[in-house]
Image (cartoon, rainbow, N blue to C red; front, side):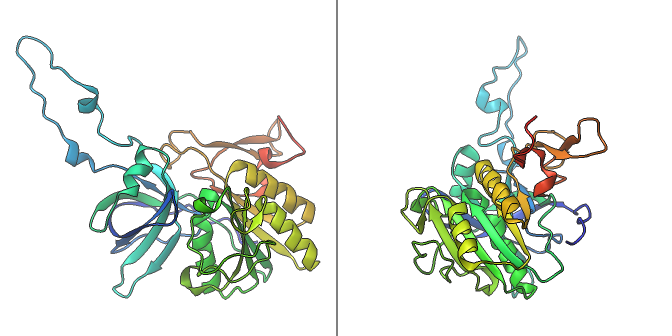
Length: 325
């Protein structure tokens, strides 16, 4: 396994929107193009200001000589989301004009993501990044498996591009959703109902990796959860080659993937989801417990935004069935 990456270099940028499209009922994809952007790795994220820039909402209020001004909530608080929102980098590449293109995928659930849903080319968005530490790609030639669920799918798209660029070919992918209309990718063919990975998606960068899709209600792909398809594929192939799993998705899915990979005896990295108020390690809203034998209780706190969001499975205390504190 490659060594832990150094602390990332991040910057604040005004990012012009060059494309925006709906992927499904609740997900939109937004593409930015910038003259330059720091190096990034799959699994890192952006903090996005999901409202118009501060200067567009400056308000002048008269102060009467005989009292205090009347201030309403709208005057004190700018419209839209107050805090920035974290979004995994869903793809990154350099265009023919030399500009750096970045993509994010957003699911509309509140005022911030609703603002993103209505972005159109020509708008400019305030972003900070790349933030966090991403996936660590094994230097040795092992089999690689991408496992994503719901809004955890985007970082795996960027990871697929990077693996393809590195010449990795033994790569399979499994994506799980609750129902068809919440799948945040546009498929090129119908996935198999038995959950066997097939070439049914045009991955970023031209990667030809096979993909299996599961849905809780059986409306697309295999009925059930993503680990059902993963287990059937693994058992049917009687695989023995060393394997690393990269996973991102809801907490319940990540716990299931952690259990499955531990039982299968394969390495696993988890990209966890936590509320992130700042993304810079100052607000302490994204604490996670990690193992540390040197401490009295065998664990200590780390921050998902700066120490993660990608962690090795066995470092995360709360993703182990052997310990409940």
